[in-house]
Image (cartoon, rainbow, N blue to C red; front, side):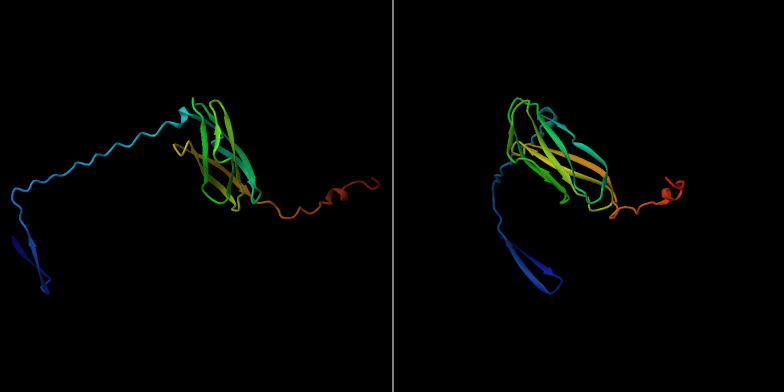
Length: 165
């Protein structure tokens, strides 16, 4: 046995004892690490229509919607698992767990209500086939202020009409 004394900043001595083993053979198992599977190419299974939507100019505080379409171009049935939005101003309308066969198309309606004035860009993540496939779709636009009251009537035209008309 070997005894080693260690001093820690001159305040306290610590004694450690190590046992020496003769002819000890180390048996260590080499862990097997599988390479991660390459993600499947979603474009070989689904076609997305309106996955990069531009609302253009929309009134601030007035809800708007648009439809995203997902077509199954695979040979197997597919399932819409979830639609996850990036913020509370976006509301999806869809049927969770909706199945659709080869050649069939489903619709996800995405609603947006902008409380902030100016340009915006949002993302939504679509999950398909037990989360085997994910797709991020985006939409953007710009909000403008809507007058809270109508403009006052303009009587100037009445003043320039000839008398008697």
